[in-house]
View 1 (cartoon, rainbow, N blue to C red):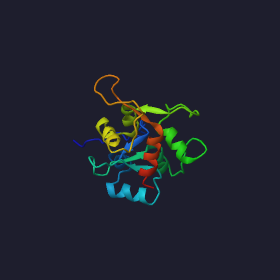
View 2 (cartoon, rainbow, N blue to C red):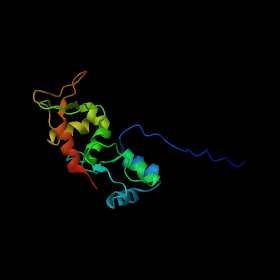
View 3 (spheres, one colour):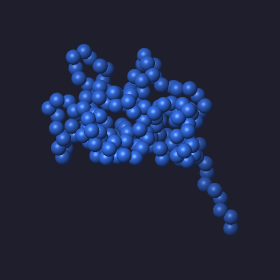
View 4 (cartoon, helix red, strand yellow):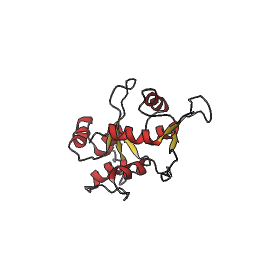
Length: 165
């Protein structure tokens, strides 16, 4: 008896701002080299490599919206925030309140890990490697409320330095 193929999925909703290389490969039906070629030629315009000394292999994350734009054959559909990088930051961290003079914007490390699509240990490796800077007085400890606070400016600087395109 012939098997009937499952119905095609017309659209999959991606709820995270950044996706892994595996997700991009599945969404685009390409291998890693194919996705990397799209990133390198700028067809996918917002990709980052989060590798560290501990996590030395490439840890590629792609802005979900960039992936969706590529699939649709459109240019970036980021919100108007003055400049493109600010719009990307707002897409990745929509919970961050607007900057205020004299106030240090900060986020907990576990939230940063979630939004960047990495594990908590990877976020702590980025802190240990001084890619991400803790708010003065913030300490890492286990248990509820133990996630340290990270200065948002260091997160923005890290993303700028790790952009692949």
